[in-house]
Amino acid sequence: MATLASIGDAVIVTGLDGRIILFNRVAESLTGWSESEAEGMPLKDVLLIHDEQTGDTVESPQIQALRENRRVELTDHILTAKDGRLTPIDTVAAPVKYEGGNVRGVVLVFRNVTARKEAEQAVLRSAEHFRRMADSAPVLIWMTGTDKRCRWFNKPWIEFTGRTMEQQIGDGWVENVHPDDLTRWYESYEACFDRRAPFEMEYRLRRPDGAYRWVLAHGTALHDRTGGFEGYIGSCVDITERKHAEDALVRANEDMKQFAFAVSHDLQEPLRVITSYSQLLLNASKAGNEEEGAMCVGAITEGTNRMQDLLSDLLSYTQIEAFEESSVMVDLNAILDKATENLRPAIERHEATVTSERLPSVYGNDTRLLQLFQNLIENAIKYRSNSPPLIHITVERVKEGWRLSVSDNGIGIDAEYHQRIFGVFKRLHGRTIPGTGIGLAICQKVVERYGGRIWVDSALNQGAKFYFTLPAAQGAHA
Ligand code: ADP
Image (cartoon, rainbow, N blue to C red; front, side, top):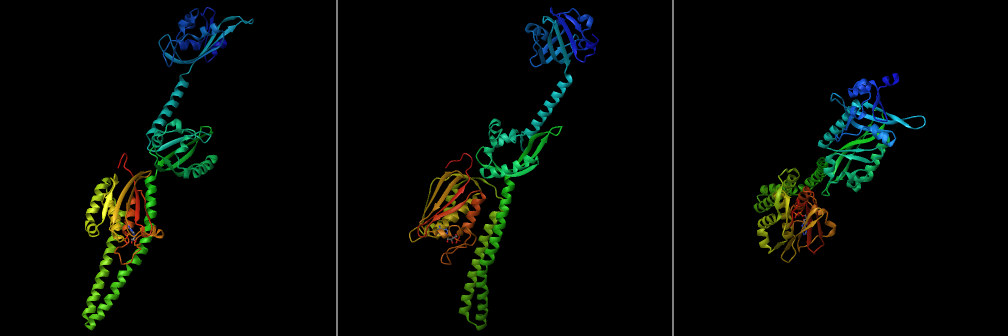
């Protein structure tokens, strides 16, 4: 008896009839019944318990222990004390046997688990807080187990990739990594993981529409309170815009170099003409030779005009890099109409015919798109053969958006120069055909500005077909 009284758990012993024989102190305090009140009472009247989740009243476990002649355990249950107090308890009931094995009664041991429940609740709450915070963070968050494999992603990650959690946990998410980045990714991830070191890397991750975005990933090892390794947690931030800006900077630097070279080289030529004819003009005026003087003035004027053309084309070219113009939905049919309208005098003079398939609308800037179309059509007229120019525009839906082409029946371009002609001041003709060599460079800049590319398919005397791609506006059709 003394031993029972000193036990930290509540203990009740009943006889075979279910009536209470023994009732210790802790049982008194948890049930609100005194030992003297409880003795002789049927246990089911004293121990009122219900299921914590469902609220259903539960059969006292000692009844089951007797019926089945075995030890019975109950968790997640609530005890209602005599005064209505509620206490979460864990209970064990076991038959008490004589030496011969005959059952004599049941012993029931139960304990107040409030502290444990509160600790569990606190853990659940903090897990819930973490999940909410992670799901509303403007970054993609992931977690791995100790086996290197991912076991959780936050909502932004799921939305970013457009695939379900089930599809992505384990190694499933790797399917969204760009194939060209996979090996590099594995190597650095594994090296850091094995050393439990923090890691940082950039790679491309696929969006639901198939487009890849650059992300910057950070990861750090997770340890429990005793220092045991639990896996990694990390984040990814979309850095595509920054990457594009970096690429644009590299391109701009390249362009600057090309520019500096082209400008110093090509602008020298009209300057040289102006300088030498100025000298001649001086001599002619000293000698009173008016005819020679007039010829010199003509040459100087021509040099100055050429210089002006070069500078103004150069300016339009540089403006494309710098432009921050608004982009809107632009109907390319209207752009084409405007380009042919602007080129009407040349079209009529050379009896050119411009035909086109029905063109789509794209997202862009109308001034730049007009420049693109106008330059290509102007060239198709300028570099004509002996027959009247026939210019045809086509469009086709391809993976990267729209692929358009402007073809002509002109003099064509030898394969050797197919790349070169897109450079600044790069021309294949001397003064026989006027031009500054910037038109195609402008076209290339405009197309690249929209993430497309431009190229030519041609052979000498076979006409030329200029292709370029432009991104398709979502859901747009030709
Ligand atoms: P420009 O016409 O002022 O010389 P471009 O940059 O527009 O400058 O063209 C560069 C060069 O590419 C031209 O000088 C010409 O040799 C060649 N080219 C451009 N378009 C055509 C075309 N449709 N057919 C044949 N050659 C062309």
